[in-house]
Image 1 (tube, rainbow, N blue to C red):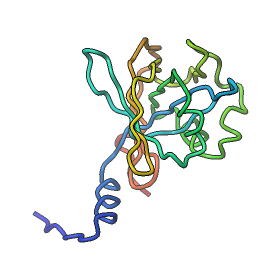
Image 2 (spheres, rainbow, N blue to C red; image 1 turned 45 degrees about the vertical axis):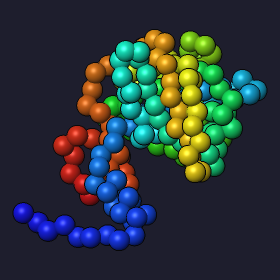
Image 3 (cartoon, one colour; image 1 turned 180 degrees about the horizontal axis):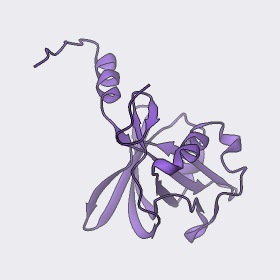
Image 4 (cartoon, rainbow, N blue to C red; image 1 turned 120 degrees about the horizontal axis):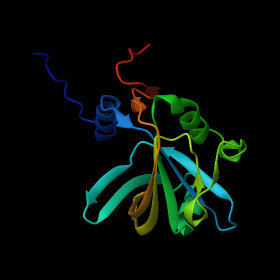
Length: 168
């Protein structure tokens, strides 16, 4: 058994811990106040429970997508599989180019959807909780669009990986 190293700095302890914790990758989309598509890649999406069907995700209030999310009523939560790496990277890059391609269309409630995702939850925002410079968003799941079953795309050690893939 290896020995654990004590990290006294709480910021470094948090960063080091979450570098060792793989997270599923999702894309969250919505419309901004002008009705234009907005969205981002997230690794914080999780289920809160099935009765009622609730999910949550986190976002930095300084992100380019926060103004759209702050006023949005509906979102689409896309789960990503190993075949969606390019989508994850695009939605984490320059926000002005995220919807430049024709790989999405208008879905229920007008929210942008990427049909290549493994599944998409259409959800109504229930609560927004500001926490320091971030926000926790809680949503009511309204319906789902279920796509191809494939191994999940994961975020681990500051990069995207597929299950069983060796790190470079």
